Amino acid sequence: MIDPNYKPNLDNPLTGDVGFTPPFPAYPSGHSTMGAAGAEALASVFGYSYSMTDRCHEGRVEFEGVPRTFGSLYEMALENAWSRVLLGVHWRMDCDEGVRYGTVIGRKINALPWKK
Image (tube, rainbow, N blue to C red; front, side):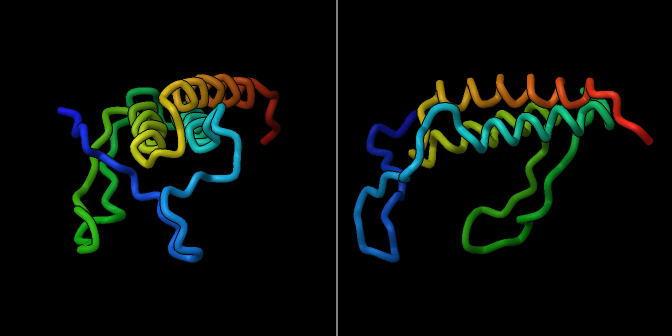
């Protein structure tokens, strides 16, 4: 269920500005692009069905620090991308295209004739 009163916290604590808008283009999302490229690179090594549990924030008290389990590295890249929408700095299309671009970039890099 979506909260109709949801407001992303984009206040700038350094300047006191309320409703801060980041000074960069939204399309495509850089976080989404880089996350998907990284996921593609890792999946080529560990496999496309590699599942994992991220415990890096386990036990943190400043937010709900619970382990996150992902069925694939691509699933983790998608969550990374969609977090940008919830933060309020991107539209969904920015993130969807960033994931698409990142996946293509990762595949093209993996296709290069790397030397051992």
